[in-house]
Image 1: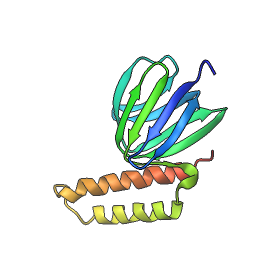
Image 2: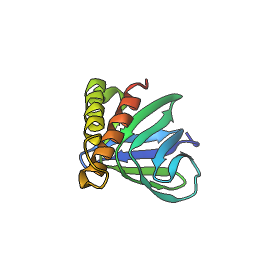
Image 3: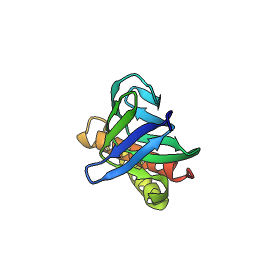
Image 4: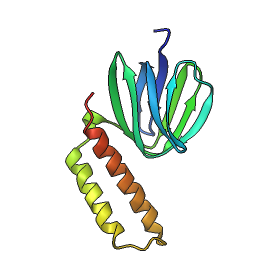
Length: 136
């Protein structure tokens, strides 16, 4: 327990997770990074991607949207738009969203405002599909 790290994953709607973990891996805007207890203080923006942590020797995966992470030596607070645990994701729905975003991206100019929105939708769908394939 002394080597465990307190983690809170918070969305606008709920606390998606709160508890002690052994370590956490976070999709930071400058790349993925891992945190153990005793980590130096850090504030990072987050990208759409896969967040995972180990608790009691088991790995848990979340698909997360953009947000922020605050790291102290004993706690990590994750503030994100959305966080979906692997067992809560509808893979077929995520695949449909991915196919739709890919299709629409081929029909739109890169300079169009909607282009970046579609790229973000594609990234979310890819993260959700990836996480849905992970077991807890």
